Image 1 (tube, rainbow, N blue to C red):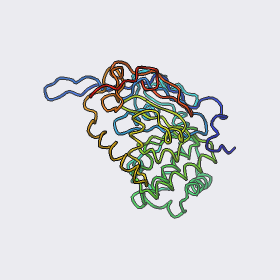
Image 2: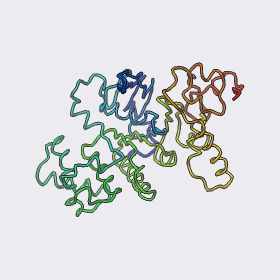
Image 3: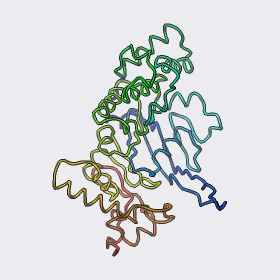
Image 4: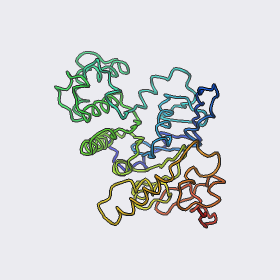
Amino acid sequence: MTIMKGSSAAAGADLLRVRNLTVTFAGRRSATWRRPGAVVAVNDLDLDLTSGETLGLVGESGSGKSTTARAILRLLRPSGGTIEAAGFAVGAFGRRVPLEYRRAVQAVFQDPLGSLDPTKVIGDILAEPLAVHFGLRGTERDRRVATLLDQVGLAGHHLRRYPYELSGGQRQRVSIARALAVEPKLIILDEPVSALDVSVQSQVVNLLEDVQERTGVAYLFVAHDLAVVRHACDRIAVMYRSRIVEEGPADRICEAPAHPYTEALLAAVPDPDPARQRIQRTRRREMRATAPVGAVPAAGCPFASRCPHRMPVCTESFPDWSPVTGGGRVACHLHSGSPTTPEET
């Protein structure tokens, strides 16, 4: 059955349900043999994703978005919270992750050259998961490999090539084909197009949409570029320094952002309007001048030190979620009924 983009509301129960996820890394020993305090990479995070839907998880470097993806993939063990994905309670896994989970939840990473075996030709790379998960051999396996290659828009002669002989866009298509080989329910896309040229980015995003329409697979699209995410996603969750600060429909987030940090991310997206360009340049200078330093504050909003609308309450407590006109919610004291007098700077 074809599931069109945007039809996820009718797709049924959550395919991915994350509640109160926390990931903490212990500090490394320094030259003085003192161990710095623990680093909270993800703090009390909630996510929901339904079949056939694409959720964008966006934020700048160090926000915790890739750590969240790795926790869902069970490439690291969370410090707290629960993850339920494709019918599996991920927290119940021991050291060995069930093969059935690896089949249900796949990943496509930023650097395809680093995630594809350089000693194997493309045909063997695509054949391996078919043999491991389905026991396919011989002609049946070869036919399936050829079908996978065709689905991602590559010609048959690529089967005999090594990853280093392909372009970046072609390698990413192979990574997508390898993920699709096991018929997953969810694919984690961790910065899948950020290393590609703009024209190639568009091709890969369009390919992902075509695949979703054919198969109904869900995507968690991790990225830092809101322009790409808007085109690719149904909903967006904005993450800053370990916490989600806003989430909602992609168009609403990009046209009427509610959180000051979301506004700052949008200011980094090029705009052809000269007047808007001037506003964006001013906003970017403000952000650079107040770049965060040190650990995430233990109390208050993590964006408070950089926020042009900062109020005293912003450094005292993390805001509750408030609904946003147009859909979604925001964690910001500007929308929570708190006093709205800006703090003097």
